[in-house]
Image (cartoon, rainbow, N blue to C red; front, side, top):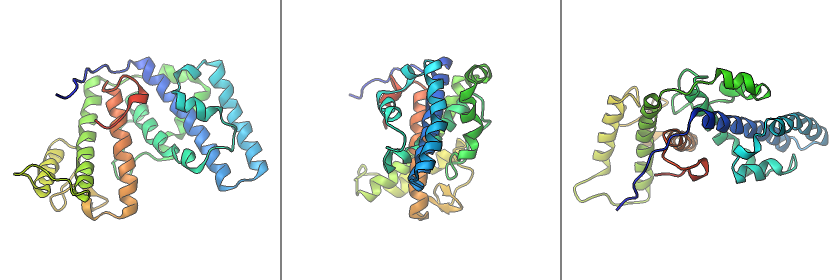
Length: 249
């Protein structure tokens, strides 16, 4: 028997502080990425000075308790000591941050999955961590039904991605099922519910191509967007006890 999921969506304050934490992490990730691309002492000095202001704000506003243990460990590392994998986490911070900013009504709509959130989409808001009171005053959590609707769309994209992965791993479906039929059904449902704007060759469209024909680079990028958006929307809808518990359901 599957474990029953008791939904407990986070309140507005929790979403606000999670958003602020991700904004801090993204700012730090940017600084680390700049240093990794040009490991120069002067650049390290500049980035360290820049982020020290953010660290001071974290302490002044008592934000530290709102970070996960893993995030605290990253922030406690000396500037310039993150490895490449840790710096690349900035992408997941970016997508999650964009979704949270949308949920707080700062961003009008979520971008298409093949585009995902870009740095320019959130830069204005990462700067607002220097004026937290103003940020809190502007934030307004969207109605639960509106967030749930986007979660349902994200779930359809996730299921389509999962089907591709299962097919590549030669996972056997039920006796009366085929991947072609399963994909057709989920594609038609996605179109009906507005998760996709068109159907190409009985499949999800990605940059004008059907899902199975996209490039390896597009697939890697799309995978990150699909999973991170799905997990973040699940969290917003109360599918996890905490942010650390986010996992595929």
